Length: 254
Image (cartoon, rainbow, N blue to C red; front, side, top):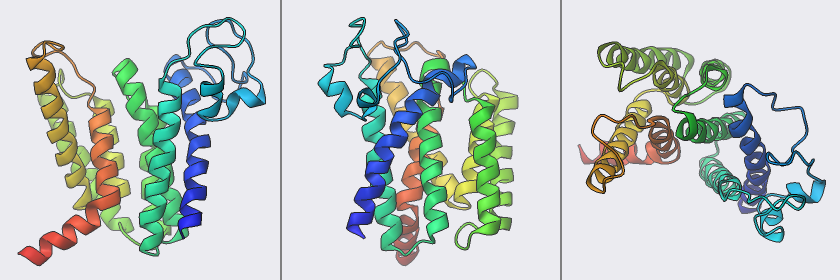
């Protein structure tokens, strides 16, 4: 089991490298397939040894070999974050004998959330090309894969959570966009009830805390827009990994 988790974690490093392409190209409306990976400054195509997650960045000392342009630290950070989350997701799923198809769905869920988080940080947008397929995959997986959530629960959770956020967006459009609404609906489809509300609670709490700290430190002004997607993603991954244990503990206390 431990060896399998490590293998999936290493796979996560490779997926993280691909997510960097998604994060950079999707907001620009570019294909994630062509052209091949290249330096965004000079356009030099990258060789195979320059695409090794994390190691290539370290060997090249964070610079393009052709034009010596600086390579953002975000690239290895995304790769390491994806690898780590894949490892933990696999470890917890395998320890509870999760259906292999459900484990695959959970890994896709984590990968898409990471891509959405960094895109939202850059652009304050959550593109439909990622949120809507995530919603569809969540609903389809709930009907086809045994486990939690069931198909009906997935539909109701998506409608309920998405509906609440849609109402907030209608009342306060400056603070809540339709991208957030679609993301929350996708979280409901993938997590079910009550895990989706744990995800929203954790995301809202952390987002509010960070926002207050930024106001106090003078990094943000009151009513200035902040990306909510990364906090929702954080709450969703927290609920995915530890929600079942938290709810089991809670019900033993009441």
